[in-house]
Length: 147
Image 1 (cartoon, rainbow, N blue to C red):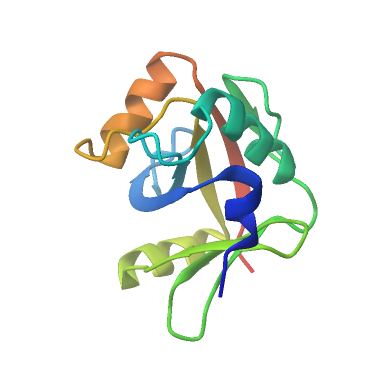
Image 2 (image 1 turned 45 degrees about the horizontal axis):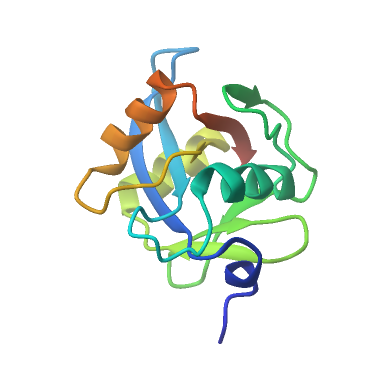
């Protein structure tokens, strides 16, 4: 099955980890959406990722946080336990999930989605690349409900 999002945005990299919620100090699940830094997308991350943010109902301006994305944007889980980030148009991006990530996401009822506007080097950990994107102001964040 081909991914219809690939036609819109090129190749996307989805990663996840457990981090600290700056609002409460508690654990929260993070999702990270990026384009690979190997040139395989056919477009620049700075062009593609604002479009992806807009498609998810997030503010596409760099350095922003959206607390309420488009109504149909959400995270769910496939029957075999994969994370499924759903776009309002019904398309989705999936990746394997650890039991800890899933438990944290379901208990909190939301995840933090970070989109980077910088291409991701394949040798850099997603958390490190996310920090670099935030430091450079080249990101968009959103609180995404879990259904």
